[in-house]
Length: 404
Ligand code: C6P
Image (cartoon, rainbow, N blue to C red; front, side, top):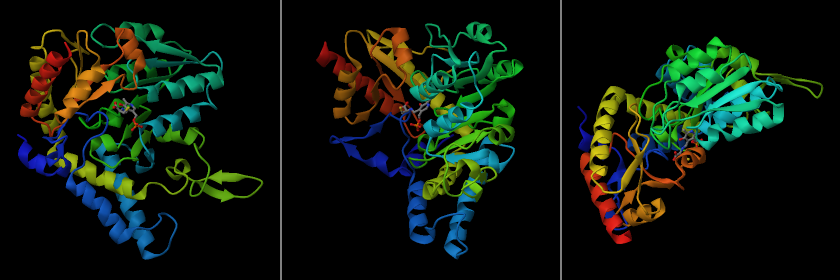
């Protein structure tokens, strides 16, 4: 059992008023709020150990390097990676995915195929399209059904010896659908394809086990899991990271540089050119500690209660339609109300202190599938409450009356 009031007191922003009303923050899919312990850790880094890492013999540089590498170890443990050097610090999911697509530019060729799904965020579509344009490979797309679930038989039918990469998100940002990634990974491996999982929306809700999943790459953002913005992780299997060329050239990613030839550093440094977000990387470890203290079993159980309550209450509203009605869902609800633009509802409830996201959620193919311009998306976190959901429902009803 979670003590929600105690948890809420860890997040200073939650006691704020917005537009004169107590903040109800339901835009956790876009970014999560930060507990005081994370904010303090960022300040402490700059006050006490700020220095560049992996470069200096001086004490501060060593302290900062140690803290950064301890954080890498925490991530390794958190996602159960086999080696710490399979954990690359990035600026976020987008960066991680682009690092991989850049690497595959030297591997794919005309006739090869890349499979993505209709549920992807633009971050996991556009880089693959760019890669296909560059290499002559073909992009294939797993379709979805009316519930917003991947049509698995269609995925099976797309697989062939031409398939070189399969990539899907673990959880859809726009609909909250949880994808059957274990099945997808196993099937893709059976035809010899590599698999990248976009875990951006999964890591706030669950603890991925990359060895159990057996994925080749798993990308996620720190800012969606109580960590600082500008942080992220790309997990890659050692063999793949050794095979892919570096993403960026620069300081710290080299073994030796001459004008004739440069040799590259060992993992993970080969993929970490330049001065990274040192404070962010260190503090991401603090965020992971915080979440593990709350406990992912507790988080999942409580968020499921929030989701069930919100679904039931929202469906009381006449003319309201929920998108993403599949059985396996995270605490995200996308909905529309007959005859009303999602933006109008979002704007009115914002005046009542309620933050939701409206629009296409960087997932336009999903909106096209449902023939809608966008949805209102309420994405819940473990620090939200049933009372807040009830207030949102009343606010949506009010907006509906005003706009009808
Ligand atoms: N989705 C949302 O409101 P970055 O921006 O690199 O941290 O994450 C990109 C990204 C990739 N994949 C998925 C499934 C995502 O949800 C996101 C970010 C936010 O849904 C902002 S668009």
